[in-house]
Length: 134
Image (cartoon, rainbow, N blue to C red):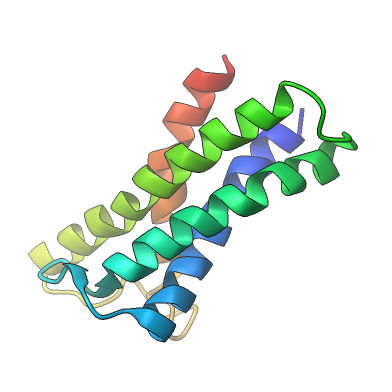
């Protein structure tokens, strides 16, 4: 039900947030500097591990599970996918912005690049989640 809609969306938020945190705290090596100059390898890796670490307890809490089921497998599959693919939604959005000479998609959310920037990573994960759960 609803948990399978919210869970992947929350994983994307966790991944995006932790990429920022690890990037700020430990980021030294740029991931794709021409597209997204602030994103780092350290942020990408730290976010991946963080997303995988939070996935199982988060899904268990959302569905009221004790952790002893196939949900663990599904949580980890989705976490790995989100960790690898989700950041590329941001890269894709950055490429579109750069091609059109824009820094942000809007100013509705100051400091966050606009509303579209809040959903770019969600857009690239949604098709896989749909196919995976189907």
